[in-house]
Amino acid sequence: MAESVTEGHPDKIADQIADALLDEFLRRDQFSKVSLEILVTTGLVMVGGELSTESFVDIPKVVRGVVKEIGYTKPELGFDADTCAVITSIDEQSPEIALGVSGEGAGDTAIVVGYAVEEAPNLMPWSITIAHRITRRVADLRKTGRLPFLRPDGKVLVSMVYEDGRPLFVKDIVAYVHHDPDISLQNLRELIVEEVIRKEVPQEFLKEETSIKVNPTGRFVIGGPVADTGLTGRKIVSDAYGDIGFSGGSAFSGKDPTKTDRSGSYMARMIAKHVVAAGLAQRCVVQIGYAFGLSEPVAFDIETFGTEKVEKGRIESAVRKVFPLKPCEIIEFLDLRKPIYRDTACYGHFGREKFPWEKLDYLEKLKEVL
Image (cartoon, rainbow, N blue to C red; front, side, top):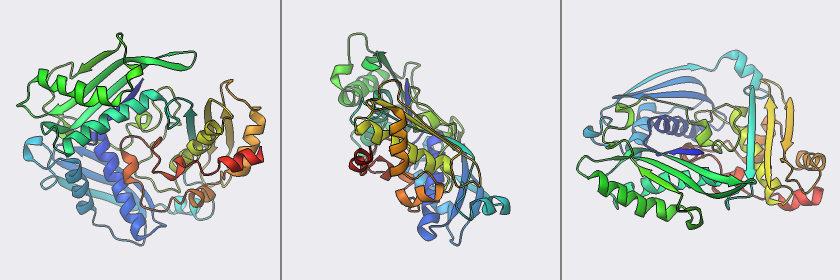
């Protein structure tokens, strides 16, 4: 199974605000140390965390800009960019943490996981790929006005049937779509099925056994922060690979790249993707362990589940020669001190070619080393 939520889901509002603020600090000072947590609820955005930076950012202005861009611009939605309160409680990064990352040490203790599989064209599981396709299309149809009755909140669950590690068909699609009160439930369901689901799910995965449900509990008029409190980092499996993959347990949004739970996860995905794209295995999990203040990873492992075409020890040895694992080297290798993070905060951190950790620039070098 896999879950995806739209930009207007309360937890995703929090993630997007956190990463938009991170981008603004990095834009003004690329060496900013940022660790932010966001809470959104009825009429309120709370920004908390730690900062070490030479820059100044108008935090309320950035917050309101994100909320407005997402689509919460009308009082009847219960959450409005122009009228919501923005409260900040931010301290300077503690001297102990600053000392730990002042050299080449990891900025956090973390287990990070990267995953790739020979399924969808982006080497991601089909279940999470389909889920993100659906929520992204819902948002696009809302923002372009093609389905003007849509509101910003929403969620999709996708379950697929596998046999011998290969996806056979989609078993269930359950979509919860936020909408205006004046559209009938039947009309809404028909439009979402025809204009969204059937256009985003590959036809070969839709069988007679496929169950499609849209708003199965009825109307979904009240949504967003007025209906549910949102917090940063509560969608870590949706942000990654869905339940078919693995998670180290850490969230990404609101953290600068010295935090290895973010930068290390990106490098782990890049390695796993190269292993699969190079034809060395059909499925690959890369796990790396980092300890705060240490420059070398404390653990590194590659698992290929018996699908490898080359002995695993050789793959691991070649990977370590091609890809850096030290936190400071990862930052330079992937050029992570840039304001690129707002785009990661919705529809998944992996599987989209726009991000540097998705580029397959080292395939030939990996094969050469092997």
